[in-house]
Amino acid sequence: MEKEYDILVCLEGEEEASQRAIARRTGMSLGAVNLLLQKMVKKGLVKKDPLNARSLRYILTPQGKKEKARLTYKFVKSSYRFITGVTLALEEEIKKKSRQGLQEVFLMGEKDEAYKIVVNLLSRMDLNYEFIRDPGILEEMAEEVEGKQGRLVIIWDVDLEDKVPEGMDYINVLTLYNPA
Image 1 (cartoon, rainbow, N blue to C red):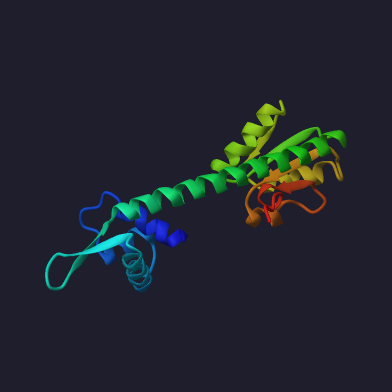
Image 2 (tube, rainbow, N blue to C red):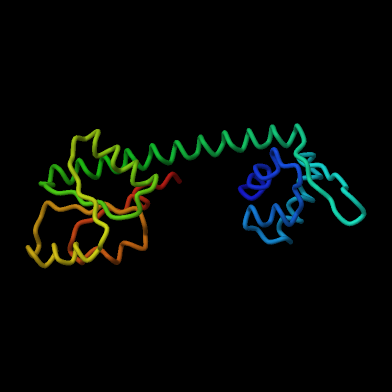
């Protein structure tokens, strides 16, 4: 479904949409693009337009435009539900930590969309935080005051979990919410 969506996006507004161009733009293999395009032609989402004896271009049909809009809506709705769920779960965890004496909050990860979600929540909760680029700083903090309570590290990348020193309290935002 997601790969079909990527192809629909790629085709919209394209004059010269060949299989190779689609594969290059979507990062899919040429074989995968070929199979998906055949399927989409059968569904009436895409039509083939022969350019010459050896090459074709693919054009999005009105039905394909509707399908792209439907998939976009479905994706936005799902993303919003996920973001809301993550935000509520994180808020509950932070409230729980606050009742247990939370004093300092540290953020570690890329300054991306997940970072913005966390910062927005912390601002709404009127909590200060410090952004940490270097995980080594956490090591120094862990040694500085052994077992100091009240510190919380918030991350949003599973690869950073092993960078948080043992015994230091942390929350991985991505593992908080499970919509299933």
